[in-house]
Image (cartoon, rainbow, N blue to C red; front, side, top):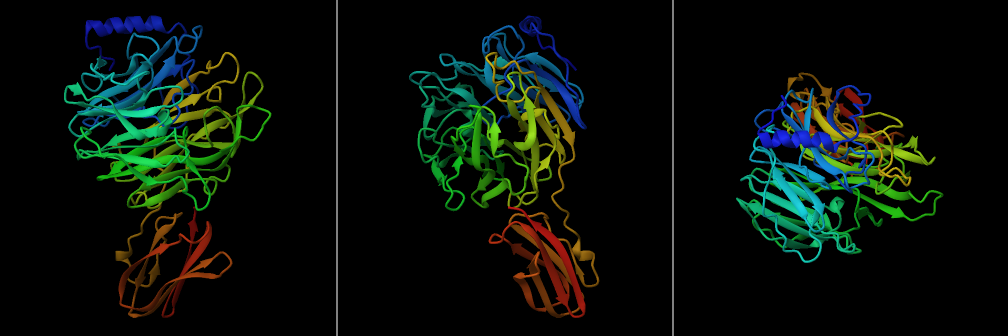
Length: 553
C-alpha cells in the first residue's frame, strides 16, 4: 500500500524521518468506527481560524482516501520553526493508513485539500514573503506531490496566505487567500487556468483570516467565493460567481446583511468558519453567527457569546437554522477557548444519495478539562446534522464523538461520498485552541477517520400501499420549519386535518373539505410557531387518528 514514486521521493521520506525528533505517540483510545490516520502533532491543535477541508475521496475508487494535517513533531523546537504539512493515504476505506511529509521545507502550514482531475492538490503557505504554495500528486495515492509553479506575486506588501482552494470541472484550480497586512487581511483570488496562473485579483468586499471566506466549485463549471468583510463593521456576506471554471468572476453580490435574526444583530463569525457546497448549480453556504461580549472574567481567554448558531443559506431556501441552543440544550454560551466559539467550524458535503450533511464543533456545559496552569478549559465535540430535502429542513444535531473531557475539533467531510458517514477530525488530548501556558502548543493531536451510519432524518412511509383510512408519521420529524403529512382516504367525503399544541389548542387547520378516495399529501409550514411538541389529527367519517411531531428551531 505504501508506494514511493521515485528515488527523489525516497530521499524525502528519509529526510522526513529526521524532521520528527519525537516518536509517534501512537493513536489514543479509539471509539466505534474510528481509525487512526497516522497523522499527529505535538503542536498546532489549532489548525486554522475557521473550517477546514482535510479529507478527499478518490472519485474512481471509493475505497481510497487522502487526509492532511499541519504538524510540528519536534517538541523541542519553537512553534512554527519545525512546522510541516503531512498527508496520509488509505486504500481500504480508511481501515489502515500510510503517511508522508509534503515537503522538506520547514514552516509550511495552514493547508487546504482538493481534487483536480482526480488528483489530490494541497495548498498551504510558508511565510508572508513566500506566500501560498500549491502541490499536486501524480495520481491518487502516488506519494509524488510536485509544486505547481507560478503562483502570482503581484500583491504589494505581504503575499496572500491562509489559502482555500477548489478544483473545477475542467481541472482549473481557484485559490483564495489573504495577506496579513497589519490586520487588514484583504481577500485575493487567483486561478490556475491550464498551465498558468492568473494574477491575483482583489475581492473588495471579502477580507479576513481564513475563517472568513471559502471557495467551491461544481461539475458544470460553476465556481463561487463567499465571505464577509473583516475590515467593515457591517459584516455583510458577499458572493462572487464564475460560470467559466474560475477564469472570470462577477463583481460580487451582497446576499444579506448582518441582521439575520429579527432585531438581533448576529454577525457572521470571523473565526467560526465558512464552507460551501453546490446543489446542482446553486451554492449553499454554511457559516457560524453570534454576538460576542467582552464581559470581564477571571480568565482572559473566557468569552460570553449571545445566540451562537450555525446557518445554511442559499437563494432557494433562504436562511435555515441548523444548530443553536434550541436543538442542543446543553450548548455552552460562555467558554474558555482561544479563537473558538460555542458552535464552530462547519463542514459540509452532499452525499451520493443526495443528502446534505453538516458536521461542526459544539461546546457543551460540563465538558471541560483542567490544563497545566489549572485553567478549566472547554472541550469540543463533533456533531452531525442531515437534510434529506436539499436544506429546507435539518435533523436534530447528533453528537458523534461523545468523549467528555477530551476534545475533538476541525471536522472535515469529503465531497461525493457514500450514503453513510465518512468524517475526519482531530482528537486533542489537551483541550483549548492553544494550551494557555507560556509553552503554548505542546498539545498532542491525532487525525481520526470515522465511519458509521448517518443520523436518521425520518422515514417517509409508503402511503400508496394503504387501502383503508390511515394517517402516517410526518416527514421529516423533527422538522424546521416545514414537514409533510401523508394520509389515505378510503371513501370520498369530508376530511379534516388539524394541528394542536401540547395544551390541546388548535394552531392550524390544514384540510377541511370534501376529498376523493386515495392517497393525500399536505405540507405544513410552522415558521410562526415556537419549538416544541405538536399533534396532528385526521378526521374522516367515523375514522379519527392523531400523531405527535416535534418542531425544533
